[in-house]
Length: 294
Ligand code: G1P
Image (cartoon, rainbow, N blue to C red):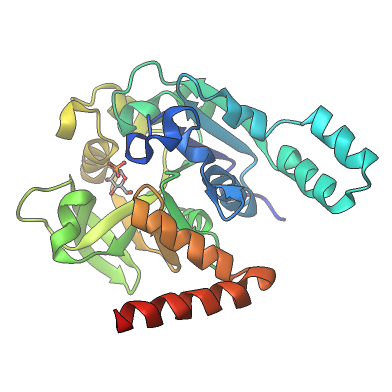
């Protein structure tokens, strides 16, 4: 691959995952599988396919198994080798060779803005990506790469946007601004989870490519919605000073942080597997038929 557009990506993974209790009592929510692969692995794969070399995990207590997942599994590999399981061995190896994974602890749950700020010294003075693990995006061109391209075109920070129904705007950061082309706006307003009068129905989805100048803004960012230091509030200030781009990415997004969204992602990704598609489709048809008869 030619020179990467961005080299570093921050992945906040310090949340408690309370929506998925009891599963998340001992398993970090980032390790819950979609089909047979932890959600976080999809995120790391997206980063790598966009040419990103360093993935900076913002980690919390009790989450060290995330690091183990991206490390060598010496004993397991020895067993697979002895049993001649070549394919399994290859795919296991590939996970540990995928990227440089480094992690930083977010010592207090002070919000997404604070989580990103924890990566300041590791990011240094270059533009970087942020990917939120709850948002799984299935796209031909990795979503973070689409944003990185927009960053290089406009020389401004970029947030991923998606249209949502009006009744869902209170669940997201919402952005509005002047339209530059079919996918792009120049953001003039961005508000975290507006309770009323959302400026549009364009929701911020968990992909960002940001300039390092966002760090000093985050350092002085006051607490916002939920008493947390919000990335969205810092981006509102960035929009006023340097400018900010909103980019409606191509691809299908799954909200893996929501139980129904998580199940949808599982079904969609299972249907993409040759060995699973037939039997799963037959079962889904049967379920629909039964539900319609009931
Ligand atoms: C975060 C952001 C929000 C964004 C959302 C996308 O919120 O703060 O602006 O719209 O991710 O998933 P969260 O869902 O983590 O509360």
